[in-house]
Length: 67
Length: 184
Image 1 (cartoon, each protein chain N blue to C red):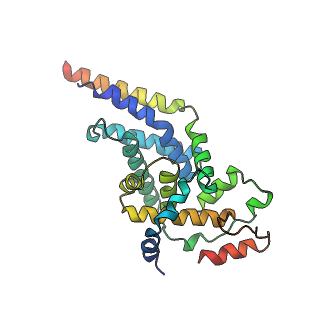
Image 2 (cartoon, helix red, strand yellow):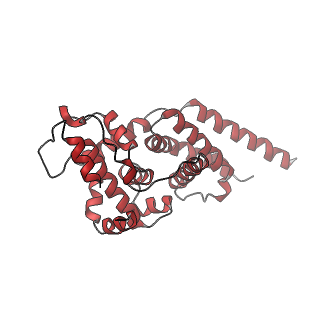
Image 3 (cartoon, chains in turn yellow, cyan):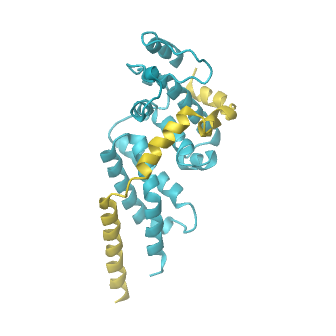
């Protein structure tokens, strides 16, 4: 059976798919723990620095335009 | 210039923890995921004029990130598979043997999913997107997302030997065989 056909068949079983959102779903609980563990980490400095640089570059550019 | 930039940056920052969680769940490795997040920030910054303030920044960033990921995979010559067939290698050990699974086992199982199934179950199951939003992010039909989530969940249950129905635990020697048989 092709995967396309599988998708169509599975598409009708909507209730099953929502299982993952069930608070008792073992898969859902693990998925969310994994996700939450990362989400709770502090934003790494490299991203804060990067945004700061991008922001600065833009300010400089717009300052030039004003002049 | 308008006052748009500071608030664009603020919204981007607010969405970053979630964007990283998405990237790391997708890729499995912090270093590669953070490189991808960095590329995404650069792309998003360059395209910020296309973003309408007040619309869903998180969904917008997630879309950029996944497009970037797949375009990098294609450039690297990696085919993006959406079928289960090539991922039948079962886990060597029976992770639920001692009861509670740890997240490491879960992570390994997640990595074995075809990419499209993995992203679907993450978006809907963990990122908090509706099926409709997930479909928009992935550029596909809602039914396709539902089907991918469903297949991902079933595959994870097989890999982790979690069963919603049967309460008999397969023994360590026969379980790789059974899960292989069910994969087809």
